[in-house]
Image (cartoon, rainbow, N blue to C red):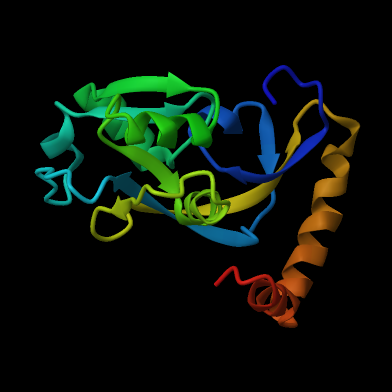
Amino acid sequence: MESQKFDGIMGAYKTEQRERFLTYTKIPFYEDKIYLYTKPGNSLPWNGKLEALKTKKFGMVLGWSYGDTFDKESEKIGIRKEMVNNLTSAFKMLTTDRVDIVPSNERNALSLVKSGQFSGHSFKALGQPINKVGLFNAFIKKSELKTFVNYYNEALIKLKNNGTIQRLKRKYNLQ
């Protein structure tokens, strides 16, 4: 997105870095829960604080945000990161013990597990979500569509207020 080859993106997390070049809608259309995933046999010192896991290796997707809070905290404490191109690669590394933890939103992790690519393997989330992050639609600030954002916001708010977004979430099992 930063290269500005596109006018907009659907389903982006709002971060300070991205706000430099993106104009976000006023409200998110969905909220993702971010969990830390590991293998059931892994005994990790998880106490709800990222600091407790700083000696563990995280399989993280290049270009992804896990929410400003996690992104900043992981940089601050210097967690060990193994960067990969996609979530499938991160989970494959988890199955082969090349990483200890994979952070992911629940929606993508469950979809990947249900795909059957990891039959014979199981994963567990460490406790409660580490973050809840709104998914927004966003437009490049230099795009001609930036004037469209106000109309888009009005329509999105109307869809939220009249219950359409909630009905779509139920229909597509995105609760």
